Image (cartoon, rainbow, N blue to C red):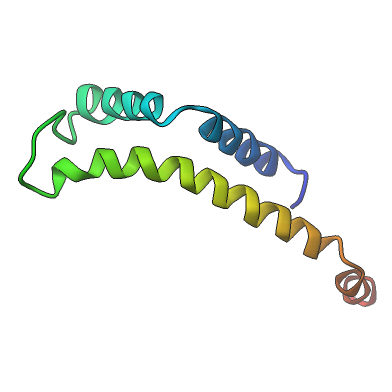
Length: 90
């Protein structure tokens, strides 16, 4: 639902992720997944597990932008008049 608690939460998270520089996001990802949870190696090269953290750090910022674009377009469609008529008839 547009304007619900989940909608506001996702918009807030996407705004925060977009506002953070990528190097800060990278540090947070390293601290969480490599140091605290020990799921991935902190540094190195040679296997696919060494590529996960950099891809995650770069992808979070781009995912935040995509989330905002999809949200704004979905809000336009939901508030459009051609969608309100079937809802009223139902």
